[in-house]
Length: 374
Image 1: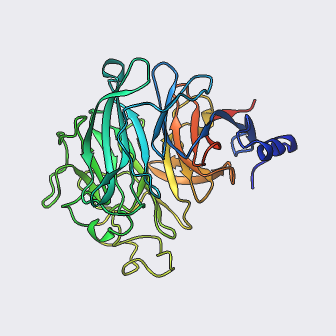
Image 2: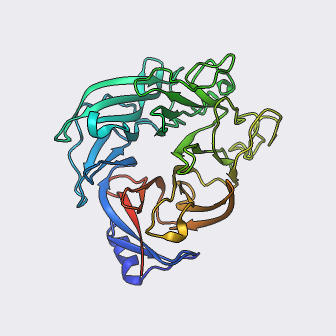
């Protein structure tokens, strides 16, 4: 394990989970994880406000402001009820591309329904004092709903045209619907900022017009390539078979017909196929599973050796994967911050630093900043 931590810091981490900083060796030099904010309850996502503050979601239903000095606000008022069951709850958060003018915030969440729950996307207008969301409306609802607590997907990414990508999961028990275009199970969705169908969506016979791609299991990481603007995603496999993809409009990524994983029972998935004509191969896959959540391209200048690398949070793997890329392919992988925490989200900050969110209950849930050690 390429990690070293001073004895005093180890003691501090045991005595107080929200340590100020912890040092690690990496292949490109030592770095520190510095605590930006702690005291969070299963934080799921963050986004950066123009004034230097952050918005952070907590899975049980709270949206909070994190000040520049790491203080947490009271929960922002105006959010709808969430179904905080299993993996469900309040999930991703992004700002409208024109937030400085319209102050619109978008959130994905597990929405309670008569039939159970399902992924939904709402938008609301953040008040000037950051205390509440006004004009709240739900602009997307995954159909069908299901009474369960698994595989909500839920990452949100605005593309360069202003359309919004929404990732969904197969709800674990509804995998038989993933290969059907008449539902939103196991799909990447692309909608306009008001929930309507935007120009440029694929026109595939039998597909709902909001569907961008299909054949996905549970996508919990999504971002745009900084140079091309192309959507990239990571999704959970079962026992192995986690995938890194760049989903293209109108294409089918295979789940559950093909997979590099196995059932949790160790039995083959379907017919045990890893490829089939008409179904796309992943850019990269993990076996055994790391349980990927959160995805970012490193675009900062703080650590020049990381420029262009891909960073993926690992829940079961309890590390952050640093992927070295060449010509769109993964040519190297380093596991950073091993055994430190379950990493739920990875974000590039506007200040050029990489930020991480840990999936821990209160008071241990944290936002961390990766800082090079000179």
